Image (cartoon, rainbow, N blue to C red; front, side, top):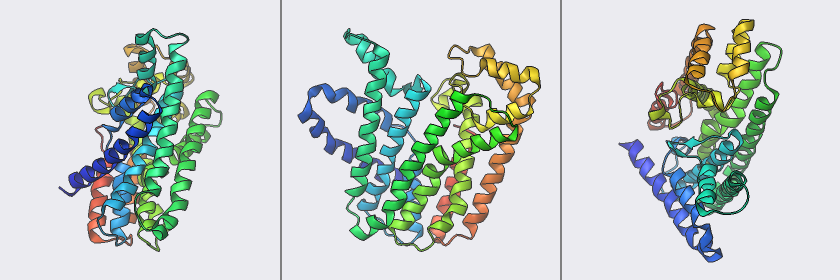
Length: 353
């Protein structure tokens, strides 16, 4: 009941902000309407995890319910939207949340309209610009949330650092795919974990939780890392497993799409660390092939399972989740917040998409 109410408040704040922005784009040109259509489609999905963790960081630190906090927390969905749009362009993804990826929407608009030039270039350019708009609006929504100036001042360093960290993590991900396999066995696993930390774990759970606590004036912001960071890592490791073995009806992406995109995840790094020369050759030849068919996906899945990489990744997820649960038990938060965060721990690491 509480979770659904929070989701409703977050959605209302998010959609109200976007609605207030529509006239601004309309004043510029009616030709900008496809940007809003694409953004509306993307924002209609998602679990709203980042605003939820921000909310409970606030409430757990003694903050009261209020529209201003929901607005500040909802701004994180615009950060997420911008990051996803840019990520899909870099990965060449076709779908997101069960719908065409944003750059594919703009590519189709170009094709359907019979315009000149490259539809692909137009699609990617349009998506990059919409992602930039989301990042701009994220800042505007946070700063204009209505929270007191002293609260915003406390939260600003975390808010700014979070946005920088996710961009750095995205670059490391891009770099990892470009480099391909790196020698050194476990070194590749550590490199993949670093990407997990900065591209996902921090801005999904640790920083939103700390942001809420800082906005409320908590003096134990840093201590929340002991819960937020391991849970964020567990969350992304679960997402990586689902990207290979998940049900497309739940994940919103075709089966094995992460394999086609060549993502150098911890799961892949663990596979290569344990693979025979023949298995490693098969992984390297198939990973990142956009035309990878069902048989290729199944072969890669069988290698991942056969090397014990899937089992090890599940062990890591359980270990990080256990670390988070132990830290939560001793966290300086209200009992209601601890209970809510315990439920979010299960949600973030669930085996279903």
